[in-house]
Image 1 (cartoon, rainbow, N blue to C red):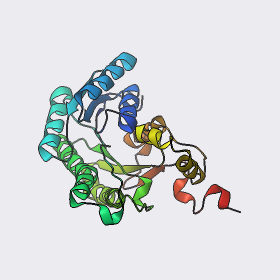
Image 2 (image 1 turned 90 degrees about the vertical axis):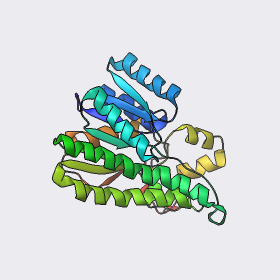
Image 3 (image 1 turned 90 degrees about the horizontal axis):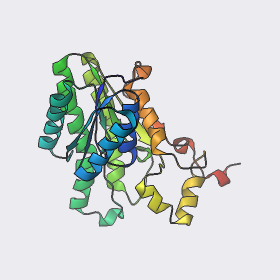
Image 4 (image 1 turned 45 degrees about the horizontal axis):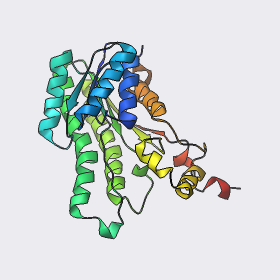
Length: 259
């Protein structure tokens, strides 16, 4: 087991990538604290962890854009399990709007959850790890949209681009405390949102053309990357964003346009 007896806090863990990470971390031996806004969904995740692995886990309701909630998340985690080893800052939100029509409220909502939330989770987790004096791992969840552009998601692209730079700065600022910081950049992944996108065959065909592997990734595949970054297997990595994207980042043209 790669994460045996490690205590891992995972935000945005009630569904999608976060829920898959929570289960995969537990399979690898971690004591998981799942965080999200919806208690009912969070309790379903902890039940699944117990039913499949027999391991103890905890759900804490949390809005990562609020410092008081994040502070409580860390406190409850340490109260239950006695320490903190891993923070996976996965919680995020998105919105779709033309640049000219994005309201200040919409901009703030995406930036507050995606970028500010990642900052708060990293800072509170790092402070706890420093107090415990045993190092740790912080993993931020970015996106291919940190580098690629999308005209209807300026706020999301800005937030994820910020996460990439934040990851580098955090890595440099925390390595002297034995804390490694890296990020994951998912590409097209079969989440609930992508399932809705799949109903539009034209749009789905476009996504597949732009993905060299010719398919959508799974949440479980991203979770395995997260386990790698959380474990000693990645002990010489810091400040990196690992893209789990089916090759999306390396392709300039659609598959059918290349010669």
